[in-house]
Length: 512
Ligand code: KIV
Ligand code: ZN
Image (tube, rainbow, N blue to C red; front, side):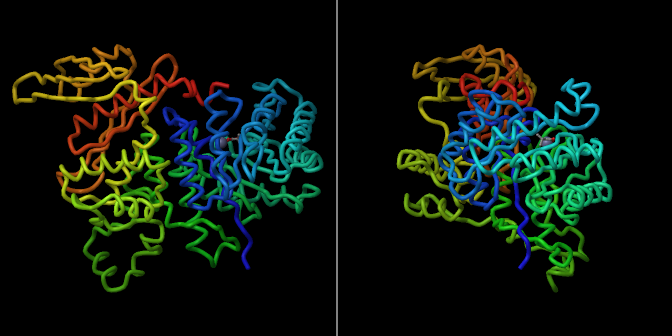
């Protein structure tokens, strides 16, 4: 029997700290459900003290997630820990993750605390957190640049105070695998009580070594890896969950540990996170990139056709890549639609949401004869859009775009149910449409990102558009899909505007 490697996913906390990747409460809930479906052990759902929106999202996740442990981050102070404890309270399995910096530079320049004060604050934080749950994790922020003797002292003290998981973060992504493995081994050997806790690693990717460092720590005795879907995270990101999990699974000869992850849920999770955050996945990204299993050269194709393992070390279907399969068409009924969604692991919240999604499916089937799984996934991504949060709604759009002429867009929107019309010229049809919308909305928001992706192949494919808007220090992503990319663009712009109006959105994930 192999030992369990605990997979701690922090897409909803550290991942959300990627610039512009902040998610709404509904979006976080959808990601959390997918993480649970993938059998992630611990979901770090956010940082409860960061904002009322964060608190509400964690609380909402704690109310529905049953199988995974739900965790909130908290600085080592009473207010943060109280908020974390209250947010995770409904979860059957709950964890508080409290942290304080231990490197000389952080203690002196950022915290302005002496090493003795840091140990004292850490111990107090653990004791207080234990009043809310028995599952308490402690992180020594910037452990990579901390003095090893001091790290041993802090870790020994927090074990005595009741910490059950000790996390060793390479906060600034400064480590290299051999040194990181050695550091983990030294800590486990030297800290009294080390055998009573789970040692964890949390690596950032500034030098492109987050996954390699995490795996080196596992080989040295770490039994929890903190990671994110698609390697999302602060600056260059965190260790990518899919790479850590598949390395362990693909090399059982090297690793003495195993995870309980359902790897067939990896690609759906990657697509969901990419679509919600507006962070595209590079085509050559390991495991989840569009080309990860594509063989281009004739020699490779010939080899794979003769014997798959000549050039493939993993099977595409084991990580959730499905062939573009025709699944439904114009004549498919509500039951077939519902059944296929269930097969894809998509649960809609109640009959109303199902009926609305089915109506959108029928509209799409009128325009596009072949409907693939990817189309269905895009279609239900509007699931969180309800009448209450749809302040602006697209009714009509018309664009004229002609060689040598300035494009013109005419739009009709409803604003809280009242029809408004506008028209504008622009440098292209999308620019003209956005200008026309702005004439009605007058948001003054700054457009930070506009990106279009084809969901499936073929010229009749749906275009999926992401728009990122900033206003008054808040950044939101809007998404929209349609076979007409100008309409998809209008939908995504309006989706972003609707989010900007939502009071539950956080101001800035790092603004605490
Ligand atoms: O990178 C880091 O140090 C963190 C801690 C809060 C664990 O994200
Ligand atoms: Zn981090």
